[in-house]
Image (tube, rainbow over all chains, first blue to last red; front, side, top):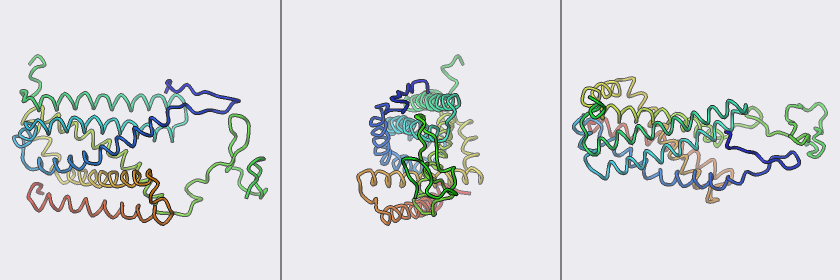
Length: 135
Length: 154
């Protein structure tokens, strides 16, 4: 991305001094996602087969909605870092690299916003969409 | 063996594609690629970690669609569940659960390695094999439970 302003000394690229933070963020998000993923799998099994009313009842529990929102955001953060690493490893053309990294972040942000909107509406018991959007 | 300073292969007939030109003009050997290494299970583990991680992006999109269907009311939700519960839908969820269990277990494997433990060749291979076996067992147990309890039916 354009944020990468590589520094060269004697024509050799030197460290960008942001590796440790990224490394820690990967580990921290992984560590937190271990229990959250198990909880999500358990929740999926609890919701499966309960239909529309059952799913709404699950969201009516505030703790479920809050933990799901946290899981959603941390998952997308982790996903963004993972896809970034893969793209950086295999794409060497500057323009394609920038495009794909931008697209990756754009998709993660879009999923975060849309997901949080749905989770919030389900948690507070809003009328089904598109209610509230001029209908 | 080659001379790392001159970058000249000790065997003149050696394949020159193992050498690369650095920005400062020096010739440096490159790491051997897949077809050079003897196959080992940690290699499969690493490749699978990336493939499953990428595949789970699709899972995140499906979860977003599920949330959307639920937020759009009973009609949209029933349509979503109808597709998700179809044979093709169940195959996709099963594949995603395999990817999820693998990425989870493999991620824990990486966290263990990050502590410095299990990094001997034998230990690393054992840990990776355990990860692979766990993936299959966990996914089958998860779906066995879902079907046996009647939560999911065909």
